Length: 383
Image (cartoon, rainbow, N blue to C red):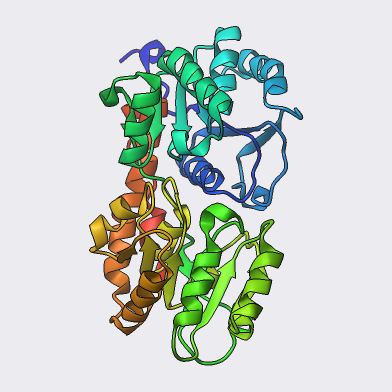
Protein backbone atom coordinates (compact mmCIF):
# COMPACT_ATOMS: atom_id res chain seq x y z
CA UNK A 1 0.00 0.00 0.00
CA UNK A 2 1.35 3.41 -0.93
CA UNK A 3 2.31 5.70 1.95
CA UNK A 4 -0.40 8.21 1.10
CA UNK A 5 -3.09 5.55 1.64
CA UNK A 6 -1.93 4.25 5.03
CA UNK A 7 -4.78 4.67 7.53
CA UNK A 8 -4.04 6.56 10.70
CA UNK A 9 -4.64 4.24 13.68
CA UNK A 10 -3.55 6.58 16.49
CA UNK A 11 -6.19 9.25 16.92
CA UNK A 12 -7.23 12.20 19.09
CA UNK A 13 -10.31 11.84 21.29
CA UNK A 14 -12.02 14.69 23.14
CA UNK A 15 -14.06 13.64 26.20
CA UNK A 16 -16.56 16.26 27.38
CA UNK A 17 -17.69 16.45 31.03
CA UNK A 18 -19.13 19.16 33.30
CA UNK A 19 -16.26 18.67 35.79
CA UNK A 20 -14.47 15.87 37.64
CA UNK A 21 -16.72 15.55 40.65
CA UNK A 22 -16.72 12.22 42.42
CA UNK A 23 -19.54 10.53 40.51
CA UNK A 24 -19.75 7.30 38.59
CA UNK A 25 -19.97 8.93 35.15
CA UNK A 26 -16.74 10.81 35.81
CA UNK A 27 -14.99 7.60 36.86
CA UNK A 28 -16.25 5.91 33.70
CA UNK A 29 -14.87 8.74 31.55
CA UNK A 30 -11.51 8.45 33.31
CA UNK A 31 -11.46 4.69 32.72
CA UNK A 32 -12.09 5.20 29.00
CA UNK A 33 -9.50 8.00 28.87
CA UNK A 34 -6.93 5.77 30.57
CA UNK A 35 -7.56 2.89 28.20
CA UNK A 36 -7.30 5.09 25.13
CA UNK A 37 -4.16 6.85 26.37
CA UNK A 38 -2.43 3.57 27.23
CA UNK A 39 -3.24 2.40 23.71
CA UNK A 40 -1.33 5.38 22.31
CA UNK A 41 -4.21 7.69 21.39
CA UNK A 42 -4.17 11.38 22.32
CA UNK A 43 -6.89 12.26 24.79
CA UNK A 44 -8.19 15.71 25.71
CA UNK A 45 -10.43 15.91 28.75
CA UNK A 46 -12.72 18.88 28.05
CA UNK A 47 -14.22 20.24 31.27
CA UNK A 48 -16.82 22.98 31.56
CA UNK A 49 -14.97 23.80 34.77
CA UNK A 50 -11.69 22.13 35.73
CA UNK A 51 -12.74 21.35 39.29
CA UNK A 52 -13.62 18.21 41.21
CA UNK A 53 -12.34 15.59 43.59
CA UNK A 54 -11.19 13.25 40.81
CA UNK A 55 -8.71 15.64 39.19
CA UNK A 56 -5.77 13.76 40.81
CA UNK A 57 -6.83 10.63 38.89
CA UNK A 58 -6.37 12.15 35.43
CA UNK A 59 -3.80 9.81 33.85
CA UNK A 60 -0.43 11.01 32.71
CA UNK A 61 -0.49 12.15 29.11
CA UNK A 62 -4.16 13.16 29.14
CA UNK A 63 -4.54 16.90 28.59
CA UNK A 64 -7.12 18.88 30.56
CA UNK A 65 -8.86 21.64 28.60
CA UNK A 66 -10.70 24.03 30.91
CA UNK A 67 -13.59 25.85 29.18
CA UNK A 68 -13.93 28.10 32.27
CA UNK A 69 -17.69 28.40 31.91
CA UNK A 70 -19.97 28.98 34.91
CA UNK A 71 -23.01 27.56 33.11
CA UNK A 72 -23.34 24.74 30.59
CA UNK A 73 -24.69 26.98 27.83
CA UNK A 74 -21.77 29.36 28.36
CA UNK A 75 -19.41 26.54 27.35
CA UNK A 76 -20.81 26.45 23.82
CA UNK A 77 -18.57 29.12 22.19
CA UNK A 78 -15.38 27.82 23.81
CA UNK A 79 -16.17 24.23 22.86
CA UNK A 80 -16.86 25.26 19.27
CA UNK A 81 -13.52 27.08 19.12
CA UNK A 82 -11.75 24.02 20.51
CA UNK A 83 -13.30 21.75 17.87
CA UNK A 84 -12.30 24.10 15.03
CA UNK A 85 -8.80 24.61 16.37
CA UNK A 86 -7.81 21.13 17.57
CA UNK A 87 -9.88 19.00 15.17
CA UNK A 88 -10.20 15.83 17.25
CA UNK A 89 -11.15 12.62 15.50
CA UNK A 90 -13.93 11.95 18.00
CA UNK A 91 -15.98 13.89 20.53
CA UNK A 92 -17.44 11.90 23.42
CA UNK A 93 -20.04 13.98 25.30
CA UNK A 94 -21.32 12.74 28.65
CA UNK A 95 -24.53 13.39 30.59
CA UNK A 96 -27.61 15.20 29.37
CA UNK A 97 -27.97 18.19 29.06
CA UNK A 98 -24.23 18.62 28.38
CA UNK A 99 -24.67 16.16 25.53
CA UNK A 100 -26.90 18.76 23.85
CA UNK A 101 -24.17 21.40 24.18
CA UNK A 102 -21.74 18.94 22.61
CA UNK A 103 -24.04 18.37 19.63
CA UNK A 104 -24.61 22.11 19.13
CA UNK A 105 -20.89 22.89 19.30
CA UNK A 106 -20.14 20.06 16.88
CA UNK A 107 -22.57 21.52 14.32
CA UNK A 108 -21.47 25.14 14.84
CA UNK A 109 -17.83 24.18 14.35
CA UNK A 110 -18.70 22.02 11.32
CA UNK A 111 -16.55 19.42 12.98
CA UNK A 112 -15.67 16.21 11.23
CA UNK A 113 -15.23 14.43 14.55
CA UNK A 114 -17.22 11.31 15.17
CA UNK A 115 -19.85 12.30 17.75
CA UNK A 116 -20.74 9.85 20.52
CA UNK A 117 -23.11 10.55 23.43
CA UNK A 118 -23.17 8.77 26.79
CA UNK A 119 -25.79 8.80 29.53
CA UNK A 120 -25.31 6.81 32.69
CA UNK A 121 -28.74 6.76 34.28
CA UNK A 122 -32.43 6.33 33.55
CA UNK A 123 -33.04 9.84 32.25
CA UNK A 124 -36.75 10.03 32.94
CA UNK A 125 -36.00 9.30 36.61
CA UNK A 126 -33.11 11.73 36.67
CA UNK A 127 -35.07 14.86 35.80
CA UNK A 128 -37.50 16.59 38.14
CA UNK A 129 -40.71 18.39 37.25
CA UNK A 130 -42.87 18.64 34.16
CA UNK A 131 -40.92 21.49 32.55
CA UNK A 132 -37.59 19.70 32.72
CA UNK A 133 -39.21 16.48 31.57
CA UNK A 134 -40.62 18.24 28.51
CA UNK A 135 -37.18 19.76 27.81
CA UNK A 136 -35.62 16.30 28.08
CA UNK A 137 -38.10 14.85 25.60
CA UNK A 138 -37.78 17.70 23.11
CA UNK A 139 -33.98 17.91 23.13
CA UNK A 140 -33.39 14.16 22.89
CA UNK A 141 -35.92 13.85 20.06
CA UNK A 142 -34.42 16.73 18.08
CA UNK A 143 -30.69 16.49 18.84
CA UNK A 144 -29.83 12.88 19.75
CA UNK A 145 -30.47 11.53 16.21
CA UNK A 146 -27.70 13.88 14.98
CA UNK A 147 -25.02 11.91 16.83
CA UNK A 148 -23.15 8.97 15.31
CA UNK A 149 -23.74 6.78 18.37
CA UNK A 150 -25.70 6.94 21.60
CA UNK A 151 -24.51 4.90 24.60
CA UNK A 152 -26.64 4.15 27.64
CA UNK A 153 -26.52 1.58 30.40
CA UNK A 154 -28.09 -0.58 31.59
CA UNK A 155 -30.72 -2.10 29.30
CA UNK A 156 -33.63 -0.54 31.14
CA UNK A 157 -32.08 2.92 30.76
CA UNK A 158 -31.74 2.32 27.02
CA UNK A 159 -35.40 1.33 26.83
CA UNK A 160 -36.24 4.54 28.69
CA UNK A 161 -34.23 6.69 26.27
CA UNK A 162 -35.92 5.06 23.28
CA UNK A 163 -39.31 5.86 24.74
CA UNK A 164 -38.66 9.51 25.57
CA UNK A 165 -36.65 10.30 22.41
CA UNK A 166 -38.49 8.29 19.79
CA UNK A 167 -35.16 6.84 18.62
CA UNK A 168 -35.37 3.21 17.56
CA UNK A 169 -34.13 0.94 20.32
CA UNK A 170 -31.63 -0.76 17.99
CA UNK A 171 -30.02 2.65 17.39
CA UNK A 172 -29.05 2.91 21.07
CA UNK A 173 -25.95 1.07 22.25
CA UNK A 174 -25.80 -0.55 25.67
CA UNK A 175 -22.29 -0.68 27.13
CA UNK A 176 -21.88 -1.35 30.81
CA UNK A 177 -19.79 1.20 32.66
CA UNK A 178 -16.14 0.12 32.60
CA UNK A 179 -13.83 0.26 35.59
CA UNK A 180 -10.04 0.49 35.59
CA UNK A 181 -8.73 -1.21 38.74
CA UNK A 182 -5.17 -0.84 40.00
CA UNK A 183 -2.67 -3.61 39.41
CA UNK A 184 -3.06 -4.75 42.99
CA UNK A 185 -6.05 -4.29 45.30
CA UNK A 186 -4.94 -4.12 48.93
CA UNK A 187 -5.95 -2.52 52.19
CA UNK A 188 -3.44 -0.39 54.06
CA UNK A 189 -2.63 0.58 57.62
CA UNK A 190 -4.52 3.87 57.50
CA UNK A 191 -7.71 2.17 56.36
CA UNK A 192 -7.35 -0.70 58.82
CA UNK A 193 -7.04 1.81 61.66
CA UNK A 194 -10.51 3.17 60.86
CA UNK A 195 -12.34 -0.05 61.65
CA UNK A 196 -13.65 -0.52 65.19
CA UNK A 197 -13.61 -3.92 66.83
CA UNK A 198 -13.32 -7.40 65.38
CA UNK A 199 -16.81 -7.89 63.94
CA UNK A 200 -17.75 -8.40 60.28
CA UNK A 201 -17.07 -5.40 58.08
CA UNK A 202 -19.82 -3.91 55.93
CA UNK A 203 -19.12 -1.12 53.46
CA UNK A 204 -21.10 1.09 51.13
CA UNK A 205 -19.79 3.78 48.78
CA UNK A 206 -21.79 6.75 47.54
CA UNK A 207 -22.73 10.38 48.01
CA UNK A 208 -24.61 11.15 51.19
CA UNK A 209 -27.88 12.11 49.51
CA UNK A 210 -31.46 10.91 49.64
CA UNK A 211 -31.24 8.77 46.48
CA UNK A 212 -28.58 6.52 48.03
CA UNK A 213 -30.91 6.00 51.04
CA UNK A 214 -28.23 5.43 53.65
CA UNK A 215 -30.99 6.01 56.22
CA UNK A 216 -32.49 2.66 55.17
CA UNK A 217 -29.09 1.00 55.52
CA UNK A 218 -28.67 2.39 59.05
CA UNK A 219 -32.13 1.12 60.03
CA UNK A 220 -31.27 -2.32 58.70
CA UNK A 221 -27.82 -2.27 60.32
CA UNK A 222 -29.37 -1.49 63.71
CA UNK A 223 -31.43 -4.70 63.41
CA UNK A 224 -28.34 -6.91 63.09
CA UNK A 225 -27.26 -8.92 66.08
CA UNK A 226 -23.62 -9.08 67.06
CA UNK A 227 -20.76 -6.66 66.60
CA UNK A 228 -20.77 -5.96 62.85
CA UNK A 229 -19.25 -2.67 61.69
CA UNK A 230 -20.47 -0.39 58.90
CA UNK A 231 -18.38 2.02 56.85
CA UNK A 232 -20.23 4.62 54.77
CA UNK A 233 -17.64 5.98 52.34
CA UNK A 234 -18.74 9.26 50.82
CA UNK A 235 -19.66 12.86 51.50
CA UNK A 236 -22.77 14.92 51.04
CA UNK A 237 -25.50 17.10 52.50
CA UNK A 238 -27.03 14.40 54.70
CA UNK A 239 -23.90 13.69 56.77
CA UNK A 240 -25.18 15.37 59.94
CA UNK A 241 -28.60 13.77 59.65
CA UNK A 242 -27.10 10.30 59.18
CA UNK A 243 -24.71 10.74 62.09
CA UNK A 244 -27.60 11.71 64.35
CA UNK A 245 -29.65 8.75 63.13
CA UNK A 246 -26.80 6.34 63.91
CA UNK A 247 -26.56 7.74 67.45
CA UNK A 248 -30.33 7.57 67.92
CA UNK A 249 -30.34 3.92 66.82
CA UNK A 250 -27.54 3.10 69.25
CA UNK A 251 -25.04 2.06 66.57
CA UNK A 252 -22.99 5.27 66.33
CA UNK A 253 -19.89 3.63 67.79
CA UNK A 254 -19.95 0.94 65.09
CA UNK A 255 -20.55 3.26 62.12
CA UNK A 256 -17.53 4.80 60.40
CA UNK A 257 -17.95 7.77 58.05
CA UNK A 258 -14.49 8.78 56.79
CA UNK A 259 -15.78 11.04 53.98
CA UNK A 260 -15.04 10.98 50.27
CA UNK A 261 -12.11 8.89 49.01
CA UNK A 262 -10.46 9.52 45.67
CA UNK A 263 -9.19 5.94 45.75
CA UNK A 264 -11.87 3.55 47.10
CA UNK A 265 -9.92 0.35 46.46
CA UNK A 266 -8.09 0.04 49.83
CA UNK A 267 -11.41 0.53 51.63
CA UNK A 268 -13.12 -2.13 49.53
CA UNK A 269 -10.20 -4.51 50.07
CA UNK A 270 -10.56 -4.13 53.82
CA UNK A 271 -14.25 -5.13 53.95
CA UNK A 272 -16.24 -8.36 53.91
CA UNK A 273 -19.58 -7.30 52.42
CA UNK A 274 -20.76 -4.46 50.17
CA UNK A 275 -24.29 -3.13 50.62
CA UNK A 276 -26.14 -0.89 48.16
CA UNK A 277 -29.33 0.64 49.58
CA UNK A 278 -30.25 3.07 46.78
CA UNK A 279 -33.76 3.94 45.65
CA UNK A 280 -32.54 4.13 42.07
CA UNK A 281 -29.28 3.90 40.12
CA UNK A 282 -28.04 3.86 36.58
CA UNK A 283 -25.19 1.34 36.48
CA UNK A 284 -23.55 1.75 39.92
CA UNK A 285 -19.81 1.85 39.41
CA UNK A 286 -19.24 1.31 43.15
CA UNK A 287 -21.09 -2.00 42.92
CA UNK A 288 -18.92 -3.15 40.00
CA UNK A 289 -15.79 -2.12 41.92
CA UNK A 290 -16.93 -4.04 45.00
CA UNK A 291 -17.52 -7.12 42.87
CA UNK A 292 -14.08 -6.75 41.32
CA UNK A 293 -12.59 -6.48 44.80
CA UNK A 294 -14.15 -9.89 45.50
CA UNK A 295 -16.73 -8.81 48.08
CA UNK A 296 -20.03 -10.47 48.81
CA UNK A 297 -22.90 -8.18 47.82
CA UNK A 298 -26.38 -7.21 49.02
CA UNK A 299 -28.34 -4.65 47.00
CA UNK A 300 -31.77 -3.16 46.70
CA UNK A 301 -33.40 -4.24 43.46
CA UNK A 302 -33.66 -0.64 42.33
CA UNK A 303 -34.06 0.79 38.87
CA UNK A 304 -32.01 0.11 36.97
CA UNK A 305 -28.63 -1.62 37.21
CA UNK A 306 -28.23 -4.06 40.13
CA UNK A 307 -30.52 -6.81 38.85
CA UNK A 308 -28.63 -6.95 35.54
CA UNK A 309 -25.24 -6.73 37.22
CA UNK A 310 -26.05 -9.47 39.73
CA UNK A 311 -27.83 -11.62 37.11
CA UNK A 312 -31.10 -11.61 38.98
CA UNK A 313 -29.46 -12.57 42.27
CA UNK A 314 -26.94 -15.19 41.12
CA UNK A 315 -24.00 -13.02 42.21
CA UNK A 316 -25.53 -11.29 45.22
CA UNK A 317 -28.70 -10.88 47.21
CA UNK A 318 -31.42 -8.52 45.96
CA UNK A 319 -34.15 -7.04 48.16
CA UNK A 320 -37.05 -4.69 47.63
CA UNK A 321 -36.34 -0.97 47.91
CA UNK A 322 -37.31 0.60 51.21
CA UNK A 323 -37.63 -2.69 53.15
CA UNK A 324 -35.30 -2.47 56.15
CA UNK A 325 -36.37 -5.87 57.52
CA UNK A 326 -35.60 -7.63 54.24
CA UNK A 327 -32.33 -5.75 53.91
CA UNK A 328 -31.23 -6.75 57.42
CA UNK A 329 -32.16 -10.38 56.76
CA UNK A 330 -30.22 -10.39 53.48
CA UNK A 331 -27.17 -8.92 55.19
CA UNK A 332 -27.35 -11.58 57.91
CA UNK A 333 -27.61 -14.33 55.31
CA UNK A 334 -24.80 -12.91 53.18
CA UNK A 335 -22.47 -12.68 56.17
CA UNK A 336 -23.04 -16.41 56.72
CA UNK A 337 -22.29 -17.22 53.07
CA UNK A 338 -18.88 -18.46 52.04
CA UNK A 339 -16.95 -15.80 50.12
CA UNK A 340 -15.98 -16.57 46.52
CA UNK A 341 -13.79 -13.66 45.40
CA UNK A 342 -12.71 -15.31 42.14
CA UNK A 343 -16.32 -15.82 41.03
CA UNK A 344 -17.27 -12.22 41.85
CA UNK A 345 -14.20 -10.86 40.07
CA UNK A 346 -14.96 -12.93 36.98
CA UNK A 347 -18.47 -11.48 36.85
CA UNK A 348 -17.13 -7.94 37.30
CA UNK A 349 -14.70 -8.45 34.42
CA UNK A 350 -17.55 -9.68 32.24
CA UNK A 351 -19.76 -6.64 32.86
CA UNK A 352 -17.22 -3.87 33.46
CA UNK A 353 -13.86 -5.07 32.21
CA UNK A 354 -11.56 -4.18 29.30
CA UNK A 355 -14.07 -5.37 26.71
CA UNK A 356 -16.29 -2.43 27.64
CA UNK A 357 -13.48 0.06 27.03
CA UNK A 358 -12.68 -1.65 23.75
CA UNK A 359 -16.31 -1.25 22.68
CA UNK A 360 -16.25 2.45 23.59
CA UNK A 361 -13.07 2.80 21.53
CA UNK A 362 -14.64 1.03 18.57
CA UNK A 363 -17.63 3.39 18.53
CA UNK A 364 -15.37 6.42 18.88
CA UNK A 365 -12.57 5.50 16.49
CA UNK A 366 -13.50 2.43 14.47
CA UNK A 367 -12.24 -1.13 14.64
CA UNK A 368 -8.81 -0.56 13.11
CA UNK A 369 -7.85 2.04 15.72
CA UNK A 370 -9.31 -0.07 18.54
CA UNK A 371 -7.59 -3.37 17.89
CA UNK A 372 -5.80 -4.98 20.83
CA UNK A 373 -6.96 -2.52 23.48
CA UNK A 374 -5.00 -2.85 26.74
CA UNK A 375 -6.18 -5.40 29.28
CA UNK A 376 -4.06 -4.51 32.32
CA UNK A 377 -7.12 -4.44 34.57
CA UNK A 378 -7.59 -8.20 34.17
CA UNK A 379 -4.44 -8.80 36.21
CA UNK A 380 -5.51 -7.13 39.46
CA UNK A 381 -5.40 -9.23 42.59
CA UNK A 382 -7.01 -9.08 46.04
CA UNK A 383 -5.39 -9.67 49.39
